Length: 130
Image: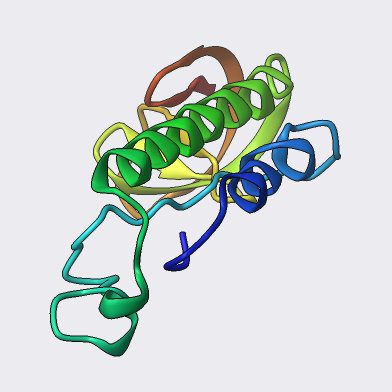
Protein backbone atom coordinates (compact mmCIF):
# COMPACT_ATOMS: atom_id res chain seq x y z
CA UNK A 1 0.00 0.00 0.00
CA UNK A 2 1.08 3.57 -0.56
CA UNK A 3 2.03 5.41 2.64
CA UNK A 4 -1.04 7.08 4.11
CA UNK A 5 -3.52 4.76 2.37
CA UNK A 6 -6.85 5.02 4.13
CA UNK A 7 -8.91 1.98 5.09
CA UNK A 8 -11.56 2.90 2.52
CA UNK A 9 -9.00 3.16 -0.29
CA UNK A 10 -7.43 -0.13 0.87
CA UNK A 11 -10.88 -1.71 0.73
CA UNK A 12 -11.16 -0.48 -2.87
CA UNK A 13 -7.95 -2.36 -3.64
CA UNK A 14 -9.10 -5.72 -2.33
CA UNK A 15 -12.83 -5.07 -2.48
CA UNK A 16 -15.09 -4.73 -5.50
CA UNK A 17 -12.40 -4.27 -8.16
CA UNK A 18 -10.50 -7.49 -7.41
CA UNK A 19 -13.13 -9.95 -6.22
CA UNK A 20 -12.81 -12.19 -9.25
CA UNK A 21 -16.16 -11.15 -10.68
CA UNK A 22 -14.43 -9.89 -13.81
CA UNK A 23 -13.14 -12.30 -16.42
CA UNK A 24 -9.38 -12.29 -16.67
CA UNK A 25 -8.50 -11.43 -13.06
CA UNK A 26 -4.97 -12.60 -12.40
CA UNK A 27 -2.76 -13.22 -9.44
CA UNK A 28 -2.19 -10.25 -7.17
CA UNK A 29 1.42 -9.44 -6.35
CA UNK A 30 1.76 -8.22 -2.77
CA UNK A 31 5.09 -6.79 -1.66
CA UNK A 32 6.08 -7.61 1.89
CA UNK A 33 6.98 -4.67 4.14
CA UNK A 34 10.68 -3.84 3.99
CA UNK A 35 11.24 -6.19 1.08
CA UNK A 36 14.63 -5.41 -0.47
CA UNK A 37 12.79 -5.20 -3.80
CA UNK A 38 10.05 -2.82 -2.68
CA UNK A 39 11.16 -0.19 -0.18
CA UNK A 40 9.16 2.85 -1.16
CA UNK A 41 8.72 3.66 2.53
CA UNK A 42 12.00 2.26 3.78
CA UNK A 43 13.94 3.90 6.60
CA UNK A 44 15.36 7.27 5.63
CA UNK A 45 13.15 7.81 2.58
CA UNK A 46 10.89 10.83 2.19
CA UNK A 47 7.79 8.64 2.18
CA UNK A 48 8.82 6.90 5.42
CA UNK A 49 8.12 10.16 7.27
CA UNK A 50 4.68 10.32 5.61
CA UNK A 51 3.81 6.70 6.43
CA UNK A 52 1.37 6.71 9.33
CA UNK A 53 -0.05 3.23 8.75
CA UNK A 54 0.71 0.99 11.76
CA UNK A 55 2.78 -2.11 10.89
CA UNK A 56 -0.02 -4.41 12.10
CA UNK A 57 -2.50 -2.81 9.71
CA UNK A 58 -0.05 -3.21 6.80
CA UNK A 59 0.48 -6.84 7.71
CA UNK A 60 -3.27 -7.52 7.91
CA UNK A 61 -3.95 -5.78 4.57
CA UNK A 62 -1.17 -7.76 2.91
CA UNK A 63 -2.55 -11.01 4.34
CA UNK A 64 -6.01 -10.17 2.98
CA UNK A 65 -4.60 -9.52 -0.49
CA UNK A 66 -2.51 -12.72 -0.46
CA UNK A 67 -5.62 -14.71 0.56
CA UNK A 68 -7.58 -13.11 -2.28
CA UNK A 69 -4.76 -13.89 -4.71
CA UNK A 70 -4.80 -17.57 -3.71
CA UNK A 71 -8.59 -17.66 -4.11
CA UNK A 72 -8.47 -16.07 -7.57
CA UNK A 73 -5.71 -18.42 -8.71
CA UNK A 74 -7.57 -21.50 -7.48
CA UNK A 75 -10.74 -20.33 -9.21
CA UNK A 76 -8.89 -19.73 -12.49
CA UNK A 77 -7.11 -23.10 -12.26
CA UNK A 78 -10.37 -24.95 -11.50
CA UNK A 79 -11.86 -23.50 -14.68
CA UNK A 80 -9.12 -25.26 -16.67
CA UNK A 81 -10.01 -28.78 -15.46
CA UNK A 82 -10.46 -31.09 -18.44
CA UNK A 83 -8.86 -28.60 -20.86
CA UNK A 84 -5.69 -29.23 -22.84
CA UNK A 85 -3.16 -26.40 -23.21
CA UNK A 86 0.41 -25.90 -24.30
CA UNK A 87 2.86 -25.85 -21.39
CA UNK A 88 6.53 -24.92 -21.41
CA UNK A 89 8.31 -27.18 -18.92
CA UNK A 90 10.99 -25.11 -17.20
CA UNK A 91 12.05 -27.50 -14.42
CA UNK A 92 11.38 -31.12 -13.49
CA UNK A 93 7.66 -31.68 -13.05
CA UNK A 94 6.65 -28.06 -13.57
CA UNK A 95 5.91 -25.64 -16.38
CA UNK A 96 3.78 -22.64 -17.30
CA UNK A 97 0.86 -22.11 -19.65
CA UNK A 98 0.44 -19.09 -21.91
CA UNK A 99 -1.29 -17.15 -19.09
CA UNK A 100 1.59 -18.03 -16.73
CA UNK A 101 -0.52 -20.48 -14.74
CA UNK A 102 1.72 -23.11 -13.14
CA UNK A 103 1.21 -26.63 -14.49
CA UNK A 104 2.49 -29.72 -12.69
CA UNK A 105 3.29 -32.13 -15.51
CA UNK A 106 5.84 -34.89 -16.02
CA UNK A 107 7.71 -33.97 -19.19
CA UNK A 108 11.31 -33.21 -20.18
CA UNK A 109 12.70 -29.85 -19.10
CA UNK A 110 12.63 -27.43 -22.04
CA UNK A 111 9.79 -29.25 -23.78
CA UNK A 112 6.70 -27.50 -25.08
CA UNK A 113 3.97 -30.07 -24.42
CA UNK A 114 0.21 -30.36 -24.69
CA UNK A 115 -1.07 -31.05 -21.18
CA UNK A 116 -4.55 -31.98 -19.97
CA UNK A 117 -5.62 -30.53 -16.60
CA UNK A 118 -6.65 -33.32 -14.22
CA UNK A 119 -6.69 -31.56 -10.84
CA UNK A 120 -5.69 -28.55 -8.81
CA UNK A 121 -3.37 -28.19 -5.83
CA UNK A 122 -2.05 -25.21 -3.90
CA UNK A 123 0.97 -25.28 -6.23
CA UNK A 124 -0.86 -25.26 -9.55
CA UNK A 125 -2.74 -27.33 -12.11
CA UNK A 126 -2.01 -31.07 -12.00
CA UNK A 127 -1.82 -32.42 -15.53
CA UNK A 128 -0.95 -35.31 -17.80
CA UNK A 129 1.01 -34.84 -20.99
CA UNK A 130 -1.47 -35.28 -23.86
